[in-house]
Length: 523
Image (cartoon, rainbow, N blue to C red; front, side, top):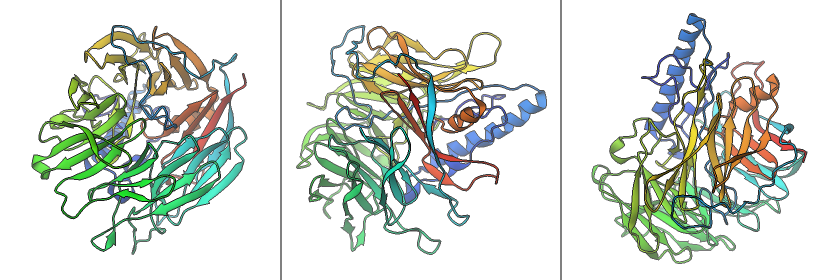
């Protein structure tokens, strides 16, 4: 999450927290297993504190600002189209190409609430527990709870199955194989103050059968390794950590590779999907060398390698085919987003095709690149394009509302194409994923409307509304808490699922919190 309006230097705006909505404290919590970067946590704390101050100032002045904030999930839920990987047209040129996509345009985009999942109870001792992970199959919407993953009927919300885990989820791949498998990292037991537990277990979940296919841990120096991230590619499950990377065969659970005691470099993590890409770290903290390696998913053999400039500490894999990497070069982004530049790389040769500058004050995407190598929001890749949300700015008219756009960069030339999809006054738009040659995006609404899902045509940039959510206060209250900055958003065939990634104790007895909400259109 990047700071929104209300950050220092932008006084007088309460950010996404308008109309009496108290800023949530949840994003301040570091993720389990050390996966929350200190800088990011501080940035989020700064956002929340400044938002509270801004709200106080605005109430005092008798003026309310409505605002909507958004970084998209940036993720798909299929291994075939692969997260923010997407698009089959790799030609350059000035115009993108639409392949039509698979998402049908409903006869009526007005949606209704299909179901809501209550927030699981959290004790005062636990305060906040990670509940990352949500997936779509043709039968179920699966969502992590506290030490469990539950499969819900896509339309009714009834429980189809429950997978019990010995401890809470730490990290979850957003990818799902064609036969319904995904991977998570979890703790081996429920944490206590005396035994907080580390994130040592990798499990492959069978979402079709509703069971754990297998679970593994890896020992290093006589104790289980703590793991930071996990992904899927080419029949392989790969997990990264500060101790190195490990991979298994997804079908059998057989280990394919693990760190060697003689290694002087280590795989901090992997990007999955159509290719498997390692972010390999060498050198000490103040003289880091990052190597971006496209590797064989069965053997781990390096196919191509791009050496990033020395001193870049972290990088995120935005897409593996085409290969796009994001990094905060020289900590110059200045907004906690983790992105100052994108690197377009030929993954056959390892040659840099282009470096695209994306200043934090102009663009609204973010990557949690410290430990979660492919957790990027507010962007999508396809049609040889990088589609990215711009930073919020003042809208037209006298409404004091905020808005933004989606723009495109050509990965061959590194230049903006001039195409632009406007969110509309009071809305903010954020790309979620590719749909063939089109971009699926979520529009966070102004205070008096419901959110929308749109398809942006890859050729014309024309927007088609796929869904518009109810504008009733009760529904808006739930939807507004599912900020695209932090929540998981999944859309497919007239179904939208929004969910939290932290479970915490309600701020008051009257405050009803939801883990997830599902919307659906009728036609």
